[in-house]
Structures are given as structure tokens and as C-alpha cells.
Length: 227
Image: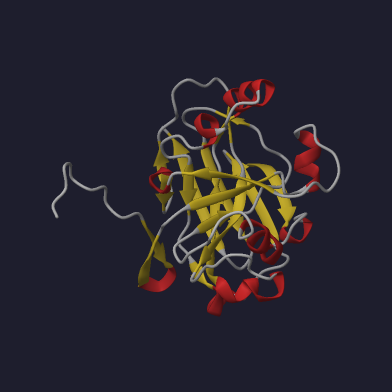
């Protein structure tokens, strides 16, 4: 059967060293998964993880120039470890969850913080604050066979050469295995899914012309310029 309109192209994330591209199915994100970031957002304690989504075509594989979005006066950065799944399932046990991982990448969850704050106040969805065009710059993927499964390691982000976020993966409230297990109790995961795992403290407002550089030890680097 043909299509009434041309189908959208498959979103593909490059794999390090020229490996076959990783086709993206869904993009999940974990909210407030580092204690200090929870505190700077006004939260307290080790709350159960909560999730939101970005459209797959909001990703910007490889980074580079990213368009400053409309309808915001407070765009902020959130550097994150991103998990790519090789296989999925429902109710995945935490002790088996890492067997489902293909690899890892460095990502930035760009956030229209003013719109998010308005949505929180009125109990509305976060879609327009988190899932806008080009809101998910992403580095190349590193297979877990090469990187291992990082449970610690520096994660940082600089704006115009000034360090804004500087944390460690070991500070995550919920680790990768726990995230996969918990998320799979809500939805059936599948090969091609990506999970942004939360950000350390230090988020700040960015403007047109800013240069963002970020990295995670053992995983890679990512650079983005707002245009």
C-alpha cells in the first residue's frame, strides 16, 4: 500500500568508528535524577523516577548548529548520559536490565524552562517545554562492548568555555538498570529506544550565539552552537 503523504525519514544516530547506524524508535527521559539538581529545581528526597518523552525527530545527532527555539525567554541546558537499547520487553528485572543495552551517548536535554514552570504551576503536560524541534542534541553512540556499563565517571558541560555543570554518574539517584526496570513497568520497551537519564546540578540560561561543550568520561564529547 502506498502513502497519502511522504513518510518521515528514519531517525538514525551514528555509531562510533563508523559502525552501522542506530535507528531510533522512541526517546524517553528521566526527570530530576541527581539529588543536587532536584534541590535546585525545588524538590527534596529520593522520589520514585518519573518519565517524559521527546519525539525522535527532535534529536540532533552529532550536535553542531542548533536553532534557538521560539516562544521562550529562558532556554536552559541539561547534559545527560543517554542509553540506547538493543532489545526491549516489559517488567524487565533490574538484575537483567543491562543485558538490554546496546550502548551509550552524551546528550543535552534543551528545556524551555519558563514554559516548563508554567506547565508545572497549572498541572499541564511538559511537551512544549521539552519536546520542541532540535531539543535533543546527541553524540555518536559507543557500544557497551567498548565502553562497558558506566556507573561512575565525570559528566560536565561548559558554556562559552565556562564550566556550568560538573558531576559524576555515581550521583544518579536511580542507576541505569533501575531506570530500565522501572520504565519497563509502564511501557513495553523495544530495540531502538533511547533513554536520557537525568542531569546533574548547574543548569543555566543560554542565548543565541552560545557555544556548549559537554562530555562524559569514557563515553564521548558533544558540541552545540545556538543559532
